[in-house]
Length: 92
Length: 264
View 1: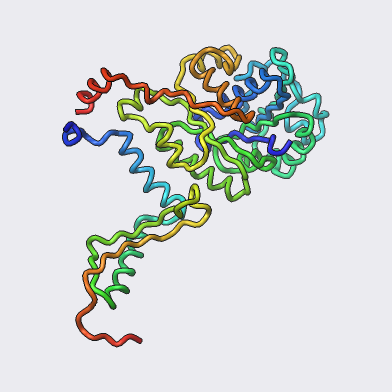
View 2: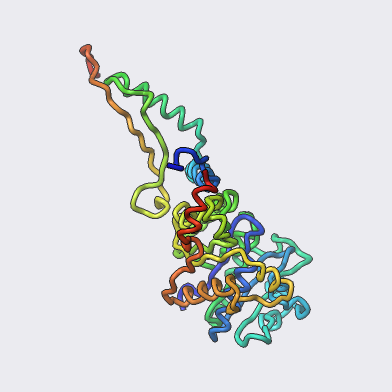
C-alpha cells in the first residue's frame, strides 16, 4: 500500500540517472542523437507501414548475454506496427 | 606466476585507491606473501604516508628509472611485515618524468622476485594512468556508491578493456548499510550490476580507517568491520571462496515495519 504514497527513493533516482548516463558515455552518443535516429527511423518505416510513433522506443544498449556488452553496443528499436498501409504502394 | 601484477585504479580521486592498495598489500604480507607496492602517483605521493613509511624514503621510482640508484636501494622494507616492500613515487617531479615503456621495464625486472606487485594508480585518465596500467594485465577498480564515482569507474573499465586487461574486479568502498536500507544509497549489487565486472569486495564506511591512516598502520587483518572486509578481499585475491559480509540484508521484522513508515 505504502508503495503508492512514497516518493521515489534517492537510490532509485541515482540508478536511473546512471543508466542513461553510462549508455551515452559508453557509445559516445548524446541523447539528442538518439532522438534524431528515432525520427529518421520513423520516417523510413512510415513509408511502408503505419506505425505507432508515440510508443516506439529507440535505445542504445549493451549487447545481451555478455557482461558490459563486450565492446560493441547495439541499437535497439521497438516499433509497434498499427497496420499495413491501405493504399497500394509500388516498391522500388 | 601469471597475472601477479595488479593495478588499483578508480578514475575519480578520493575514493580509496591508496587505502585499498595499502590494505591489500599488508593483508597479503600477513599471509606470508612477498609483496611489492609501487606508488605511481608522481608528484602527489601518499602511499608512503598511509603505510607509515614516509621517514624512510631515500630513493624513489624516478631515481630507479633514471639510473640514479639500483632497484634494491629504492625498495623500502616494511619492518612490521616481513615480505612487504614499498617503492615510493617522487614528490618533486611530475607524471611526465616517466613513460609507460619505462614502467613496463621496471615491472619486468621485479615481478619475478615477488608473489604480487601492486600498483597504486593516480586519479584521472591522463599520463599518470597510462604509466600505471602499462605493466599490468589485471586491475582492481575501486568505487564508492555515488553517481560520480561510478560514472568514472565505468569510463576506467572501458579504457582498461581497450588496453587488453584480462581480469578486472570491483571493490565498493565506503558503503553505509543503514543508508542502503533506507533506500538512500545504492547497494553493492546495484553498483556491481551497473558496472558489470565481478565483485571482489565490499568495504563498509568505517571510522577506524581514518584512525589507521592517522597512525600509518593499515588495518587489514584487524577486527574492525573494514579490517575484516579487507582481509576477505585478500583471501579472494588468493583464490579462496569467501562469502560477502551481509551488511545490507540484515533487516529485522521491526525495522522493516518502521521502515515502511519512514518511506511513506
